Image (cartoon, rainbow, N blue to C red; front, side, top):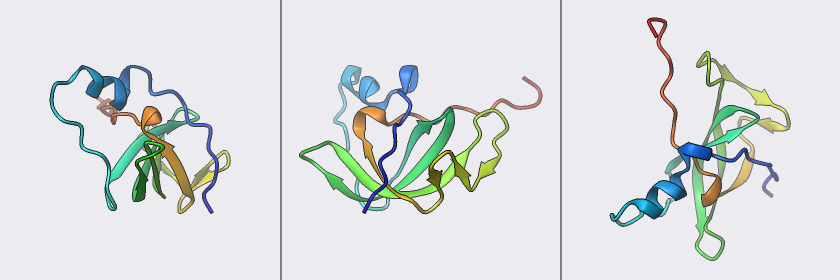
Amino acid sequence: MHKHIDWDLPGAHSVSSHYARDPNPYGKPHAGTILTARYQGATVRVRVEAYLDDDDTSIGEVVALVDPLSGERMKNLGKLTLGDLVRLPDEKRAFETAQKSQDD
């Protein structure tokens, strides 16, 4: 059974918004795809196990929790832990943000 997560809104990094403006075909996630979302300000990576076409939602395992400022990896954050099985709706998917270098 998957864990319910209240994902952060992706804002300007929204995958859905980007592809709504892009004339190229949008590829739906498939098993093995790594997706990105935001949770409590952190970057979350999810490895897709299944995609539900009817809901435009991926089901997958949390494989990384990353602090967006330091790049530090975490084992848990709030109620989310590495290895959790979660649902990730397409509208909550986000593009990865670039890490700031120490020179920035």
